[in-house]
Amino acid sequence: MSKANFDHEARLLSGLGLCVRAGKVIFGVPMICDAMRKGGSGMPVLVLEAADTSENTHKRITDKCVFYQVKHVRLGCSGATLATALGKTSFLAAVAVTDAGMTGLVEKYL
Image (cartoon, rainbow, N blue to C red):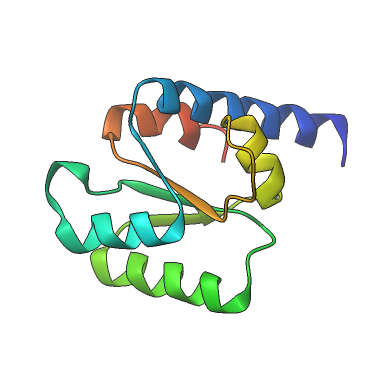
């Protein structure tokens, strides 16, 4: 990975960290799918998926995002890296940002 890509990824994860501290992030595929199904104020605006998720998980997230018209991006970092950057201890397949304003912190580094 080049220094430019590493810096870009670090800034993206830092922006996600701010979203976490603001309480505007949903962790994990089951919770994200449930939030999309329920809708309302907790509806995800942006779903970010780790690069090393299984094909089944990738299809599940993609299908839900297409159906509910939620922006979906597959990141270049692993689930372990994503979890560590956001203060979690194990693998994290996906996270969702629920606030449109906070999404801007992350989207500029995608």
